[in-house]
Length: 412
Image (cartoon, rainbow, N blue to C red; front, side, top):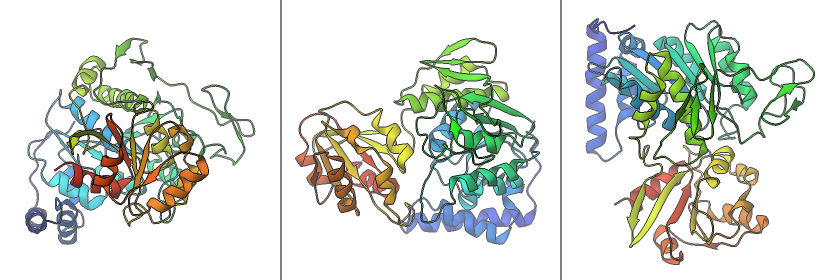
């Protein structure tokens, strides 16, 4: 276990100090938290800084297309039962942001780190994690992200022979293919509602067979492994067959699945499921996700959905009709500029909801809703949308930068 306090060499100390100074200047200038620019400056001065900062920590890496920020937060809360934790809780999940987070580790024993799926293998090489949680892979940011099969292959190659405990979702064939190159895998039955990126076998390209919750390739024999942990209704089933109740303040089945994976990770560090799950109850929101705010005298719940799989999960947890819904979509650099993914989302699930559409790409979304046969109205901004919504708590669903815009507007 980590826990020694080997001091940083002088160059690393200088890099940390310079990074913190750059971050402070960025914050003073109103340019956000400064974590990314701070990390970039630090890494420029010491390219090996990430590895040096991680050397005194037991590190958990969390990667996926969806759910990694929430799962990172749940794991961090669970591991705090065993000691101090440092984490990139706000989701800065590329090397610069991770470096900035670990630079403030202080006396932490554990590092719980969210990692962008494209950077997982590189970060794993640097920080030598004790555990890696792999949740799911699906299409996202089509203009710049690798095709999902290519990402799975990158994970598979990067994690081959890893000494880390890999805690992986047995219900996602792409994740199973990626994790199968590792010698120490803990399989979790976390579920997979979105299946449209996993109909072909990642091993041979054959068509996957999906009877019930099972899956297998009839051509090469690649199949779902037997899980040792499972989500069963409102309980986590551990490897001994014991059922532990999940009590979360976060909504939806997807978060119960995140809690199940988090409990399996915590167990790898000696934290019992009951203790881990009890600590997760304290999490009420994650970087603004699921926050309920008051704006113009109305209650608004803020929900993030960045890609088709995320939108599908979000539709399953909103209040039923006639709850009013605001949809907001941007296509800025951080979102990916290609909005063709809108056509992969089943917006007919919103039938019966009064819908207001805002965001930079509101007209793209309006066309998609028109084709789906869903009633809606286009509004110029959030304030107008809230005024147009009928009574009831408003469910506001937005992709990444649109979500940040909403938080700034309605959270003040």
